[in-house]
Length: 133
Length: 133
Image 1 (cartoon, rainbow over the protein chains, first blue to last red):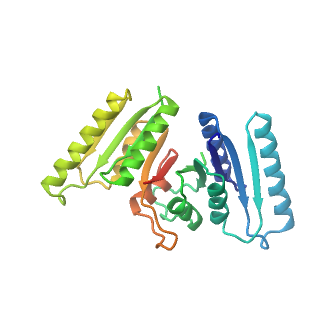
Image 2 (cartoon, rainbow over the protein chains, first blue to last red):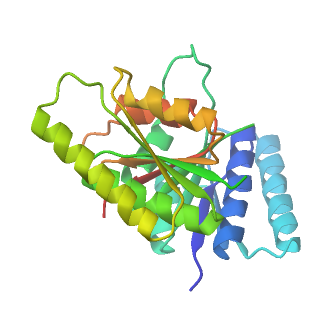
């Protein structure tokens, strides 16, 4: 079976950078892409939910049109995004997880989000961390 | 110029896992490998220094014999390993940095080393984090 690359997507510059890096990895490995979007639910207004869903559908359509094998998993089940991402990666036997990280300035406070840290330390497979350009 | 993959090596299972993952990336990208070893110096006994240097020389010879384009940078200049690694990566225009992380048990305390965290948050290029098998 071809390599599965699992990427955590959110509707930000970092999420976009993660998807772009994941697509490159899929091409390099002649693998397939699994996009995971996960929100806890309950704390987002309807407009945001609709906009996010549209962006995700557009992304899936664009990558599919480029000939990529893409699956989208969109979860709203109260989990931490890290849990949903690692759950998909494990069940899918992922070869790689890709996540986006916010860039820190050289003098900026050095703090990593708990989701990113959890994925980096606990994922079974290698994790590629990318920043927005 | 071919993609440069810069890997931080230490003489542990994680360091070895990082090199193996970096070698795979170099093959996939038809790139070249830069191995960085950095110790602050002063706090290691002579036997450890010699053993580490031997292990590094053996690694370089083995990968070279496998036909890989390899450069080794071994620093003892009092810097944090993160500084030395990012310094090499920036000057070399690295396409990717590879680092090893220690695996945490599901109930283990969730803490990432400061070097790893600094590299992940500050590196200009994507960072691949791998764990020992």
